[in-house]
Every structure is written in C-alpha cells, then in structure tokens.
Image 1 (cartoon, rainbow, N blue to C red):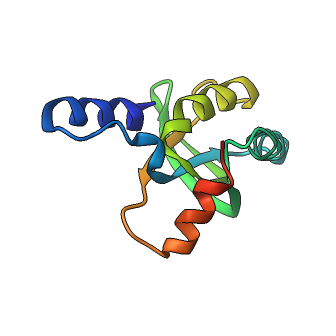
Image 2 (cartoon, rainbow, N blue to C red):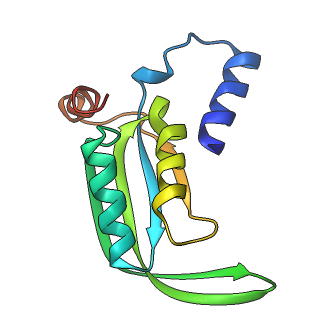
Length: 125
C-alpha cells in the first residue's frame, strides 16, 4: 500500500500519466510458516495477481515487535506482478497471513529483460 500511495503522490506533484497498471514490480512478503507461504502463493497465482512467486528459504530476520527485538527464520516470497495490483495483493495477504502485521513491500522494476517484463504483464490480470 505504501508503494501505491507514494506512487500516486509523486504522480500528482511531479506529473505523469495514469499508466500505473503498465508498471511491473516485485512485491516482497515474509512468513515463518510454510502453511502461510503455500496459501498466499496459491491464492495470488490462481487469482492472476502474480505471474510468478519465488520463495527463498532460510531468511534470518531481526525486528522490533512489542518493544523488544525479535529474531526469526523466515521465508521470503518475491512476487512478479503489476503495481496496479499491489493494493489487492496487500488485502489478500492480510486475509491469509498469520502475522498481525505482514510485510508487503513493492519495488518497481525500472529496467530488465523486455521479454520478462512483457511476460509479467501478460500473465497477471
């Protein structure tokens, strides 16, 4: 949601068309339970919110939670998608994830293999 909001603010003040749906991005989501990963992966792919879900095992996270520093071994999901779908992805993750505050962060793909970018656009709604 932050990515979407910042994008819209920048467009308002610095110009630009309303072509957000044409921008590919990666969405990063972490989870400590394989069950959460499986549910999120299946939902995002079946609903055409993701062209691809890559899962990286063994990510070590340290973070503040309820006033203390916590440590966890997590899985990192890297979602290939469109920026326009980030709000919907965020809501689905919040519905499916066991975390009270799941990490959902968007990074725009500025450059890359044009065939890969085209593939993302063709394989998401």
